[in-house]
Amino acid sequence: MPPSIILVIPCYNEEKRLKPEEFKRFSLEGHLQRFLFVNDGSTDGTLKLLEELQACDPQRVEIYNLPKNLGKAEAVRRGVLRACDQRPDYVGYWDADLATPLRAVADFYVLLVSRPDIEMVFGARVRLLGRSIKRKASRHYVGRVLATAISLVLGLDIYDSQCGAKLLRVSPAIIDLFRQPFRTKWLFDVELLARLIQARRGTNLRQVEDVVYELPLHEWHDVAGSKVRARDFAKAFFSLALIYCQYLCPR
Image (cartoon, rainbow, N blue to C red; front, side, top):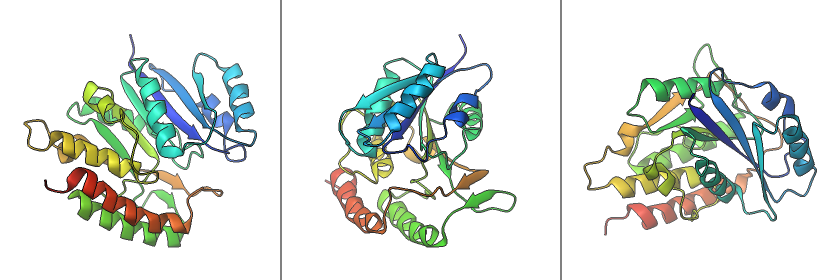
């Protein structure tokens, strides 16, 4: 049987930003590839749009409808657990606005296949010559400050934990990271890494820096209508303190 991949797509009021045709066109040749759209209590026409998309391709599109808005962290967490119940080889989560194009999934997959030691691939928005990374300057510079703080708290040289493109190799250890609700709503990616650090601290298991790979993206474009606001960056530093105390503070 060919390897299977399920991408979790969290959606909250994405009616104007969702690109159904992109999802319809995407395929990864030789693989069982499905989308699990988590409708996070949307109040606009998102659910109707998703139902139309599912009707066009019911074999590849599943909808997980949450009756009320729980936030991206919980939508992703529940979506990943639901996807893993179907026993895929790989599970990922991808921003609904496709700021990272779906064609990048192939790069993530090839890396995981060629490197069996890698358990998680994180997309990284690195401005390099020959690549198309278009991000508002203000967000870029504030993001770099936050990224530096995240690296210091985790004790990892991670460049971009917040990019909304991730692909994970499914295993009991990875599934366990999603069992409990995240304490933070915005920095759940950082909390995921902190949980992995905590789980492997003092063991003979391979450590985080050996199993997580940051893959520089060829293309990432800021899409208008993001739910992230300036105040969220301020809240992020409080969340970082919470993550440190919960998972990383020496006992």
